[in-house]
Amino acid sequence: MCRNVKPRIVRHGFTMIELMIVVAIIAIAAAIVVPMTSSAGSMQLRAAVTMVAADLEYAKSMSISRGHRYAAVFTKTTESYQIEDLSEPVGDPNRIIDHPVRKGFKYIVNFATDSRLSQVDVVDANFDATDTVSFDYLGSPLNGSDTNLNSGVITLRAGGITRTVSVEPVTGYIAISN
Image (cartoon, rainbow, N blue to C red; front, side, top):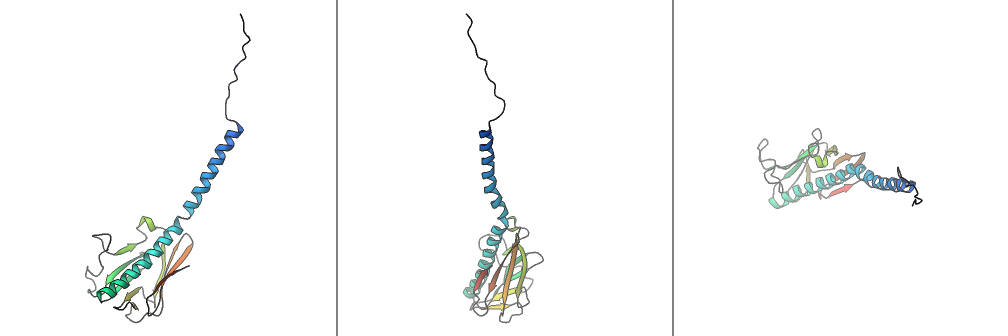
């Protein structure tokens, strides 16, 4: 009793359809990942600009609520800034105020050492040719020479994109622009 047995076909490899599905999945994954990585700098810049504006508002509100001057002092070379209580003498460790959220830390923001903002560069901080803006008890801005502010702009850059934070004279209104 001999039966007619057909030989089994052994497949080696993949069909064209299977290969096309894998390539399509890889293409979709790449299309999602590439924009996310390329926009990291712009997202860091947006966060940094918002943080600078909020910190300037904080210094202004502290000046109004406490009745004496608080300042934001920018240092382009270290890409940082700090909030200072100008009623304290220069050199006093209490001149740089304590951070209201990060307990035990001084209010110093350094873009170069903060991994969340490491792509952000402080291009310029110009308050009438000084690097300091302070606010009086009414919230009016003063430059680093303790005179009324005429023009105040902080320029930040990341990933080829530049944004500015401006402080308006007299009112101290803080605005973010492209």
